[in-house]
Image 1: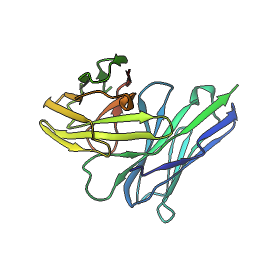
Image 2: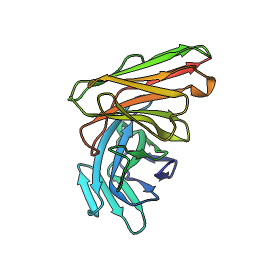
Image 3: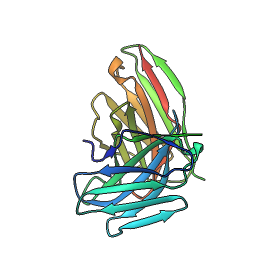
Length: 113
Length: 111
């Protein structure tokens, strides 16, 4: 079953603008991760935030986590055309399941020049 | 850098054929995974393995089996391919649950 749902499904912005995408999940988590996928390729890990963290930064990426609302957001600041990709959140549950992650349906980001 | 290699980028098979998708990782990771990706459905876990000869079903194992005879290799088998198995298949490996490394994917078409 899908754990994460990203919102919006698609987002189109101009280069230099900020892009925000959201992820909601259903059950308690150990951690939440964001991945990027360029068209027709595999996914690349971007950032991980643990359940006891509220905010994390990595370069132009900022991730927040609100466990009370079971939601996370990914902010990409000063976007570039190269940021055009699909972005997925993935969650690691608290109990059982081994080391598997459950992925959401993704947000397609298009950054136009 | 970790490298996860999937044997084929594109594959076309006929209904009823037995299909093997191969995945090899070079970082001695215990955990390996097979996902399929379909538009609007995201990634769905088919099977995963946390050790040689060990396997666990994911969310959609029906119609698939897996083999892990060596630590670096994880194979996905479609015993009798069907058209609803046309999809992008993604292999991944990890040391822990904190970061997955993905291959480039195999786009499988079953005609």
